Image (tube, rainbow, N blue to C red; front, side, top):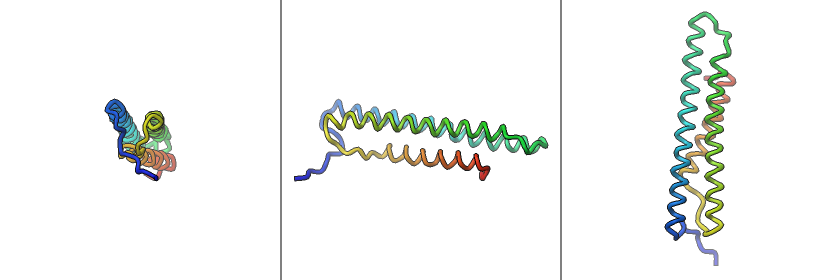
Amino acid sequence: MNAKKPYLPEDLGEKRTIMAADRTLMAWIRTSLSMLSFGFTIYKFLDTATQQAGNPQSTSPQHIGLFLCAMGTLAILLGTLGYWMTLGDLNRVEQFRLGRPVLLMALIMCVAGIALFVSIATRIV
């Protein structure tokens, strides 16, 4: 008989560990969001400043924006990888569903980071 996996393990220690992993991934998401938003803001601010100064060919704003967007995307990827490894280790001890809302949010932020990086790289924004 194929029983449905519980949402969380029965052991309170494992539940606390999962909730701690959720909070850690949320911190990675906040850090990533900060880097992505700073990268976009600095790119637009410096791009506007260089155009007003009469040097529209400068690539410095683009490089700074790309760097911060890449770091934000890398941060969310590393945080998600660590989170997934933690859930995998816990799942070996006691089976539970691995689908978590915070994981979905991290994946959405990862896609958004890649899209922002591509848009700055191609100067669509």
